[in-house]
Image (cartoon, rainbow, N blue to C red):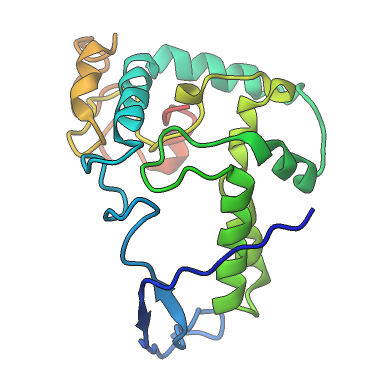
Length: 214
């Protein structure tokens, strides 16, 4: 399969140079184009801008924020932690995203396989010698295969969208925070304080066995 990707003409060129602290540090050597607007002519990640996708994106986050509870995330982690769904190659997984459009994204309405390839190719263009980074760009959204029947066919609210912790108070900086008021954990004393089920300074080793949204 061949996908032709047009490079956007809108943008500014960054000429920043940086002296690396080590031989492994990336150097910005110019040539990186920063688009000024998204596919709909708005600023990136502007969730309130009027566009063809604005209402659909907001509806997505309403359902997402209502259903992403501590117990739901716990069940998902336990179920998918068994790794008993299916085995396939990275490229086979990428191809599963050929018909997936992320309902949470205000900037893009293209199939996710195009997004993966665009990301990887843009990184390869600007950092040609950092092959690990090319791969990272290719697979960064591969978790969206959970939308496919082979991996359980979860609804979009359970797979895509911004990440936030559960098990503690929902921070007001989270996109469309107002919809958390309908989440069962919102007024639950165990989950609604600043630290919730965690302790201050618990660190990532104790945090990740707990829960980020699924």
